[in-house]
Image (tube, rainbow, N blue to C red):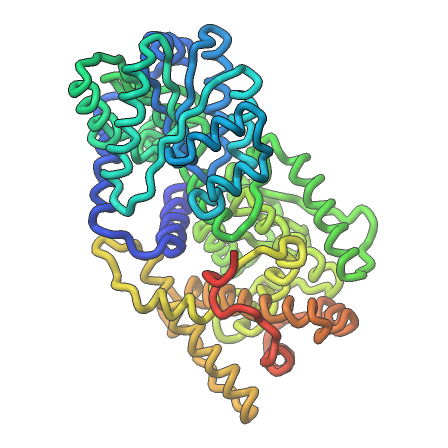
Length: 538
């Protein structure tokens, strides 16, 4: 199940990133080769010993994953306790802004001016809050920071530039140890380390280099096959290379999706975080009810399950009460990396550690509580409109709680269909294209309905993949309608009274639900959207 979830997330990441050039694919393949040899279990103590014997320490970073930057901070704390002659090198600051960086670290430039001077938003753009603690730590301990990045479309040019800066500094400062935080892919032996060795040879200088990767996917599965995925934190790869393992691969990839959605990740998202998740969920429930002026029952009871503990699929009494078709839908949501709300037991399943995912679950809890709806939608023809309306409210509620949230709009789906399908594409990527075609057809049908009151719907064709196609189409279409509903609500065109009536409506399928869907389609046709693509939004 974990492998299936990871494949789904990877397909979503590829969709968000867009087409990759041949050079980037080769670059990634070179990185994956780093983990094909023999590995052995190591320890933090052994890793620290190797760090203290090295002149240049590379630590791999996954820019959207806060745990990656926290690992850097933890390692730095250990090193500085033994060696204060450490200099930091960061990818996030272009080398051309070294003067601004020095001024900021000396206290002559405040944070806002510093970020403006280095054009942080355009040159980097990842969450400053994740990297700020590293700068605070460096200032607290009087550590110099070097900017290493270089503006170039060619990865090799950027690698060579970073290597030259590192080589020149270590040559001129032989007694200083350099700790470099750089994107994990750049640290494969044929990338920055290769260029660094070339530069050092030019300077006639020898330096001991250590490379530390983080959270290799292939190593995770090697450990999982031995039932050790949650045991060792450090692996030795040989040749001056280690890998820190502190997160499952899907959590790391999911952080990229949350970054593209402008969603925050919930800290400490693991099996032990149940109480924290409940507290956050209750807080979100309170905020949503207040924002929409809804009166909710006090002490509303619900259960939260997460992707990090899939044993509930076999053990949950709530799932044993479902019929075969309903259980199939629940399993699809889990394997498809999608959250789901199960009414009755009020079970919220979270597919990711994001506030958006939690907010969707809370929104559906509100709808279920106000409407008394007991439905899990499983029939592609009978429940299609009900599922769309359900996803509309889920997205709308999450948008109220995070107004920066994005979803695929029609233009984004058209751009997806214009891309060539890459060789070796995943089944989930083929599903994405089928979904895009169906959603665009329904969007056209919505416009026709607004014009002449006829709706020519097309449902997913029969076959083994019908349920995933039905659910993904309904989810994507619900996102677009949720975006329109939010825009209309904010502009005062969809008043609270009508919104409450919508949340109190049961969507059980049949003609009544279809009528509710078409009524909402007509009301949202002229929604005051300020964008046609999620790419238009910051």
